[in-house]
Amino acid sequence: MPRQQQSARPARRRSYDQFCPAARALDSVGDRWTLLIVRELLAGPRRYTDLHADLPGVSTDVLASRLRDMEQGGLAVRRRLPPPAAAAVYELTERGRGLLPVLAALAEWGAPALGEHRPTDAVRAHWFALPLLRVLGGLAHGGLLDVRLPEGEFHIRTGAEAEGGAVYGYGPADRPDACLVLGAEAALDLARGACALAEAVADGRAEVLGEGPLADGLRGGRPLEPDVSGSCTSDAFQPTRR
Image 1 (cartoon, rainbow, N blue to C red):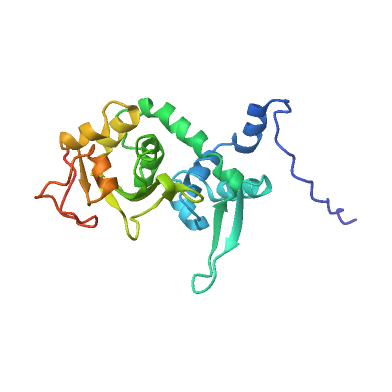
Image 2 (image 1 turned 180 degrees about the vertical axis):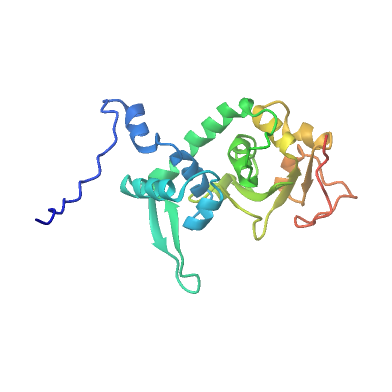
């Protein structure tokens, strides 16, 4: 007698079953990897393959499962880019983007725990965006800021530039208003509050390239020195390593 085919069981909804806003939030984002996927998508839409490449250690099954949960929970959507790209990307909904202050607070809280870079630690340049947002995102003069580290480059939108879209993005911006060049150690010191940005610029641990209100604000109001290149795309400067 042939075995009767079993009907597929509906997925069991994971919940703490507690009438508490913190518990409800963790019902949505408390699973391993979910908040790190949000971190990646806060920089803008990304393909599945790009997400997998920048989340070292996540399995394809887990990543697919988390993205599916995020879609069902209203945190992210999947859409197809128009030709010639014709690729599917994931992006955050407005509710998903609302997790930015949560991630920024976690990054600020976790920054003191970053000690020596362990050999097993993966690193991506844009992972420094969240801890630096507290320092750079609230600059008085808004604009598009490139941030260049030895590990790579990302950009941050400050002031009015940050309204209604991603506050940071992958790689260099098309037309940045200024460029900040620094090493990972200086970036972490800024994130921890161990030094001020103007102090890092003054002692050579950071360099500001460009002219205008944003660049001057990064230098603490000091005008551009005559012997410093005003180009935001020059590769001549390398951050001082100490």
